[in-house]
Image (cartoon, rainbow, N blue to C red; front, top):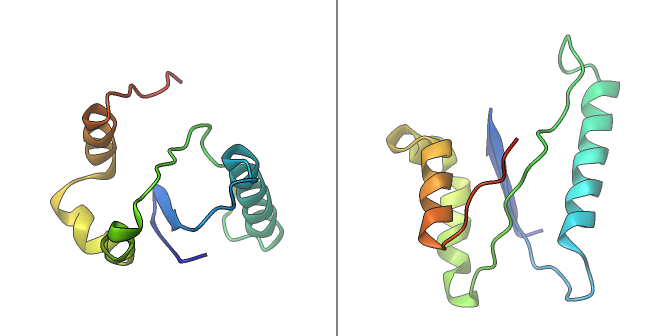
Length: 101
């Protein structure tokens, strides 16, 4: 794991994934393990559940430092642009459409 950081409505991970590993399985394990811990430790007065969707993007080695800084400075960054708007722009930039709920 390179870096992890989050906001109340989302989490960013930067990691190097072995080519034999499946992103969906990694996300499933991260969500399952973290939700189990959060609920066992009773961090909230209700059951914690992750949302259904997620995004995964590859990053060239030359941009790893920039992405790391972006993740580490989430709070300051999202004072300028909200997560949902930024995510929508990122999908549009790459010709992708968000999944329907």
